[in-house]
Every structure is written in structure tokens, then in C-alpha cells.
Image (cartoon, rainbow, N blue to C red):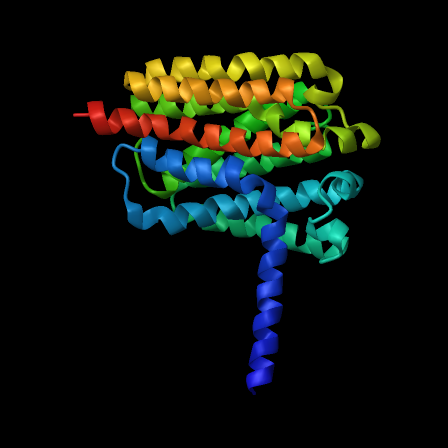
Length: 288
């Protein structure tokens, strides 16, 4: 009996790990930042809703990521061999079954939190189909635009899940985080540049490498400065944030090896997370 229970536990943990690996690369760029931004931007955040938000975001990420990874396994074989399909943890047919099961699950789960969450869920599914079936990820511009729109729906959906009304501060926070994401999203493509070139994938980094690097070097410190002023961050914290953004941006120009790009992407993910905390700074010090 004990051995059977242990075997069942190992199988279940294996299934959970397989599902997690589909979404691993989005944890620090989507799941954590949006969870934090939801509470930072919400007018009346309730910490008891953290599990609801995490589950809502993760289920929608899982649905999209399985869909995306099924369609281009060659890219993952080069860039992310740890993912379930290239690693052989799951078959393409089983992955497809899980994806199509998640479509109604996400819609029903969202409907439990109201029409706004349901609408955001439906929009995310529509954007996912556009992204994966109609070439939305084939060029850097369309990829960044569609991903930014989806990101906006993730943030609005998460706010709907906690039942928070969106005031001017919340709307401003969502708008700027989405624009920042759209203009810096290609930071994640540098570490996959070699594999993308081999598979013929067209990203901003492969099409316009010099522009992509310069946009990071100039854009990250400029965004750091502007957002610090927008959210009225104090001088010391503003200087620290701008300095960190400058270091992050400069790394994409100075260090160009695959290992350096992976480290730069991690530092960028931290910077992007800090971007989402700035509205919370304003609410804590200036909201009445």
C-alpha cells in the first residue's frame, strides 16, 4: 500500500512538473509581475485573493504556452530543450488534448469571477489563436503588439478576479506596464537568437540586431527615469532605479554571448518586476 501511494505521488508530481515546464519561461516575466502589479495598482487589494490570481494567470499561460509549443517544436529543440515536448515528457497528441481541455476550463473558471474576467479570458484565447494560427509571432512587430495586448488582458483579468474597480491610477498602471512590455519584450529573444536564426524565426533581434540592442540600452534607462517621475519616487530610489535600468540596458550591447544574454534576461525580468511595483509606491505614499 505504501509503495503504491509513493508511486502515485511520484506520478502526480511528475505530471505537475510537466505542466510547470510549459510555463517556466513566463514565471518571471508574466506570472510574478502581473500578480504584484494587481495588488500594487488595485484600489482595495485583498491579500486573500493571491491564490485566485496566481491560478487564473497560470491556467491561461499554460493554455497559451502548450498551444504555442505544439506548433513549433523545432524552435524549442534548439532554444529550450528542457520543455516537455522536446524533452519527451509528453506526446504532441496528449499536449493537444490538455490544451483543448483548458479552453473551456479557463472560460468557466473566469465566469466564476464575473463578466469582466470572462471577457478578458475570451480575448486572451482569441489573441492566442491569432498569434499561433495566423502568423502573429512571425515578425517582431506583430509579436510585440499582440503580446502587449494579451498582457493588458491578463492584468485587467487579474484585477477582475480580485473584484477591484479600476480607478485612474489602476488604468494608468495597466497602460504603462503594457507599453513598457511592448517596447522591451524582445529582451527575451536575445538568449534564443542563435536557435531562432537556425530555424528561420523572424524576431526583432534576428531582423534588426543593432536596433534591438540600442533600443534596450536607451529604452530601459529612459523608461526607468520617466516612470520614477510619473509615480513620484523619491530621489535616492529614482537614482538607484535609473542606474539599474542603465546597467540592464547596457549589458545587451556590451555582452553578446549566449550565457551573458541569459543573465541579462534575468536582470531584465527583475527590472520589469520593479516597474510593476511603482504604482504601489505611489498608493502607499500619496494616496489619500
